[in-house]
Length: 237
Image (cartoon, rainbow, N blue to C red; front, side):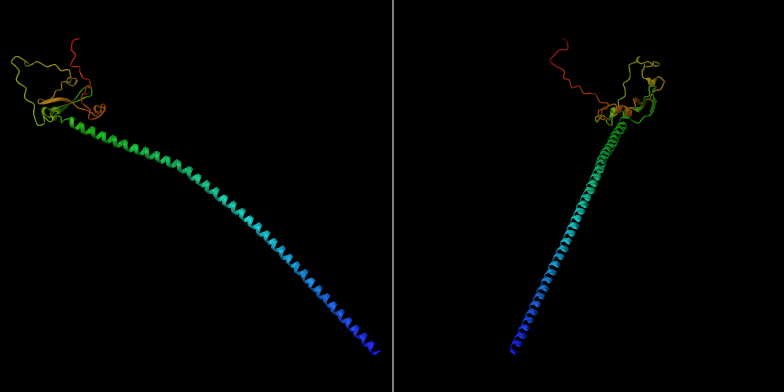
């Protein structure tokens, strides 16, 4: 009986130990399973959080990129508009400046040309108008200068410089009797004015007279005849 009781007791004890071990294993398995579930949930949560962050970052990045593009486009548009404004305002200014400079140069050149021409005319007038002993004003507006005979412009010729005109020979007896008045058809003599003895009347050259000529150098000169006369032909035909 004792052996049987001992065996039953031992068997119960073994069963109890096995049950405890089984319970312990099941509990440990549940713990492991629960831990695994928690880890999976944590991983899923982390994944979702990471995904959300990625989406937020991507959205922010896209927004920032879009803003940068819009900002760059705005800056480029403003810059192009500014260039067009500057270009459109600069070209008329340049054209106006060039036109003004050209007009100014023309205005500067013309007074210089006119001044040189005026100087040449004045120099020529001083050369041809000799110092007068007496000046007579003609009714037609001309001025008649009574110039000493040997100072008349004819003696400006290189072969006559420094010479004096010869005295006229005496007329034969009976010619040009005293009291005879020589006829003169000059207007300036109608008022009874005459030049003193030893002088000759010379019409004073004016600036208007020279201006009517094509140039100062051609004033008072005869126009050369370029037509050649046929010497082989006879005067009588």
